[in-house]
Image (cartoon, rainbow, N blue to C red; front, side, top):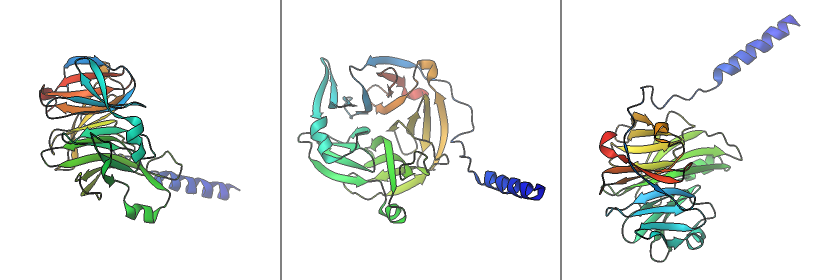
Length: 270
């Protein structure tokens, strides 16, 4: 009996050693929190924000659609009913590309649509066909989408799941050409549980990802995180969108908990 007990304990010990402990994204202390320049309350729940080169701000208002911030308030430019015909899954984030195109991301795929007609112009499937061949139950979810106009690249940040499970197997960054459905590049993160709620690309060396109350800067050229900030002191607790406003030199955070946009000074986080 004692020998069997020792054998069982040995097996349990060996199993416990096989449990993977995700590596932290960064082991360095947080940087000093930036200054909150302004706050803009939202009229309804939203997930995702994007800003064009002229400083026009757009959000994905849940069950409403794409809305533009105007002097008179939020104006719907694409209805959720029209856009959702392009996907069976809920929209998670958006990125304006130019005067005619806007990209939307949902589970497994994204869609580039016309801002005038809501018709799909291209689909970018971030769930690789090779992964589906290996595991037909695999699925991916990216809650963050961003566009780098200088390099004409869309950025997505999916986690991979299997079946009906909620435990992720990978966390990655994917780069796409907006006119091509297949990914151009994949970069894997050390923490498979990392899921950004928002993302903004200032440059390839300066990609910002927000999760919870934490803001990270990622260098996609060197494939590493290099800085992070704790934003809870600014009453930000649930980042659900990020966008850079080059006209005001601010990084705009959509805080899902307070349902407001918070402008942070970009020069303090570069």
